[in-house]
Length: 187
Image (cartoon, rainbow, N blue to C red):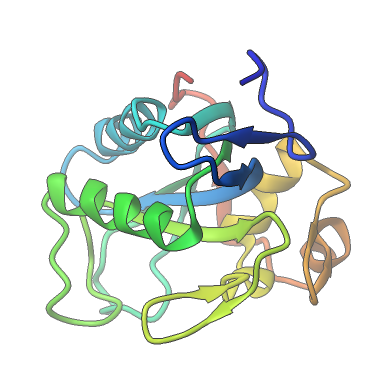
């Protein structure tokens, strides 16, 4: 294994001999209940501590109004995390759900306020559309709270099948998103 993972290199699993490609993953973090910034930092730390995951960058934090939830829902703090991983997309999803659960995420009502949201946006060029996972994330191309922090990290990135995030960002309403330079996440 190389010290600095690269999406075009592969690693051999010494126990099984299987090849595992290293893929770039884009993950969106969000929180609008409790200690929002602490929850986001906890998610960053948990991802960083995950075997077969190499965290490469964390975006600035943005504050946004809740979308699709109750009218009186608190505002969200959101950020994007970039990482390289040899985990399968479903194993990465399992890890994301476990992190949410560890921070008290309840899934009783869709779009309800939450302590932590960990969404897989893109994992390499993988596509998935099953009961558990849709990749790329089906609404990422429409959400300023995904596009703006991702643009801050990778202005030339693209969502497979949707286009360049720079172009997508120009087509969404960014009026309700505020960069919070006083709220910093540490990689």
